[in-house]
Length: 297
Ligand SMILES: [Zn+2]
Image (cartoon, rainbow, N blue to C red):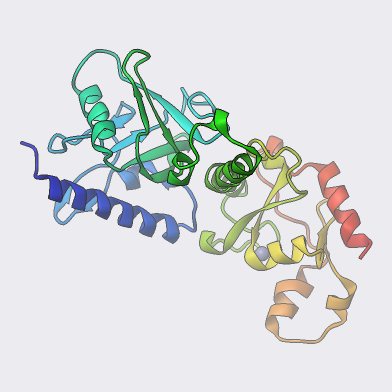
């Protein structure tokens, strides 16, 4: 039995509200599938992911509630393109899931796209509205951000639209993935002070992104709390290529309250905490380039 349309739309709106809560609560981090399977609307349990397939079609919904990128199938860019559009393939066979997927396109129903960042962890994108349906190629296409759909087809962009689209893709796609990877590599703690509150943590770039098309590599990142990130960006704090923290001499000489004393001055001479995975260690050349800016200050 399908529920009535108003109720279905109310549930979708509640799912978006709930995801806001989860995501903001997590500091814009990734969400584990067990959390996503635990969603309730009132007393009713409505898992947001389907076990074993990449599409969630609740029996009582007229159209698809969510789509997810498979972790193993999707080693980044299998379905996504750098312009921020996702191509999603119908499932094998006729009817069933595909009927509801096509109906979501026909009705313009808002749904969620869960993008895997590693096994079991997802970044949610919502509301997603399917923009194109190609029944011959058996795919649907949608942009990761509604703003992209107003720009038209990527092939038709002029310079201004292209730049605008790039900035959306950077903010909506590349930065959250970079953040999830870096915070995971550093085990969810500031590399300088060990603070563990993801709401207060950032993924800091060591040097600005040279290639703007794509996700920065984790070796150009450091997990840092907001204060240390800001201090690092402004070269009030430096990190040597040998992973030692240095604080600017003027700051060391200053006398002020506990934030300055414990938060900054006490960090001088400490070694940063490195990821347990060697391949995720910060790039020494990049650290050196950034440290030069600090030393020259
Ligand atoms: Zn810190």
